Image 1: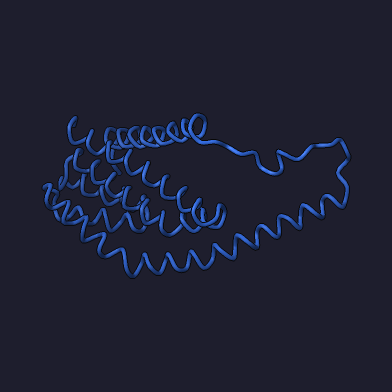
Image 2: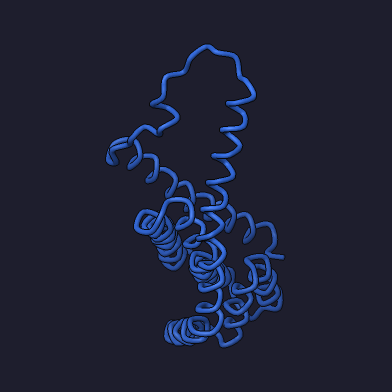
Length: 200
């Protein structure tokens, strides 16, 4: 939909942004954060053969963990879906539309933002349609895609990342993991947008 040049450029920039986030995560995990060994690693491993009792105990632990995760995951997903769909989406779109208008983007670019609420593929298709129709330039198209990407990941963070991380890591830690991940990728994409604006 975007063509060889625009599509290839979008792919390279997207990979660069995610690589940037991955390198930051590796750096902090390696040199900044103090890791603690898990219970499984701390336990001494003996050379006994696996027997039925061990298998049963492992299955019980897995089942217990799964039930605990599901108890948190299902209600959290339901609540965040409700809040996102009925409270947050409209104000977010209105805010984005005012920002786009102030920097000279055409009104048709709102289609890309609305499409990004459905999926990133829909945003790519809609932006490609605008590009092929001559309504936006390659520069505007790429900037739109990364703005839509930030919006899409923000909604995804509320709907999926926060509930999943809360269920796995608990309240404070789970929330921090989800928010740090989103903030880092949003910063990376924002830098990409600035780069596109200046260089292209």
